[in-house]
Image (cartoon, rainbow, N blue to C red; front, top):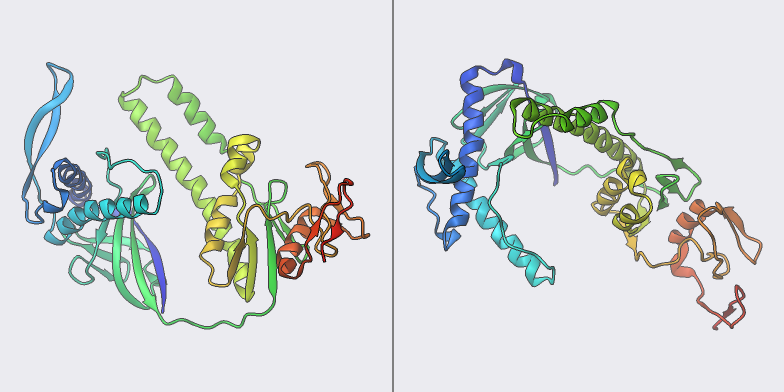
Length: 369
């Protein structure tokens, strides 16, 4: 079966003041519970039946948060269990990462919780036409319910810059689509995606002008003031819209590749590109999103990032030095092609390439066989 996640947008203009306060309260209490469980010597001993937690509040005399007060927990029992289990899952995931060799730190106290897991359908949450019920809140109006298909498993209540969302996870029967052919994909700066059949896609989203204006306005405001907070919220909302545009473009581009039975791409060092010479080009592009989605394709194959896909000819196996300005690959064997198209074609045929070793004369290798 296939797993699908459907995004339902909560209509904030249809929320009553009471329900809006309840949603805000649930996220606030989730932060209290998360920080409280982290403060314990043994986080796994945190009870799922606690009805109050100690919270550090601001002391006007010392100008620090050094006063402890007990705050009542009013959220539903299953949502409370999910908040406590989230800390335990984070600890387990960090332990697995440490055992795998990654250098990681420890969990820190959170300033804000943006996701709450709703684990049981019909109990913690329910879905109907244009409505979603959340435990402790009641029925709230949403849009996007018509797209739900299959068996509903669980959901997440998410807080974003543009409002609240309910992400519903469903299982539905897998539909086997007819797939044919194979394709090589070259990711680059000049052209975002180049396919081995010669097609090129250059997708970039420039910085929104509104984002520039809001950031300039923020620099003139007093940090921590009400207008400062309002300006930060506007910046987050603009960033969210910009990110949604990138996600949509990446999804549409990768959807075109699902018709191929074999998709080959290279593990490009996109983070290195951004840190060195192409910071702006990477930030306004969708390279990272495309690479992440290609990794999740069942038909995709990823080759090592150190494979010389650009400079090595897939016809004769010779290496040709190319500068970044040289956009045409010309080999000693007479083969000539666009460098990006040639790199994508190389990925498809790399298993059948003969290996050559240098003779000492520049650019004239010989066959080792």
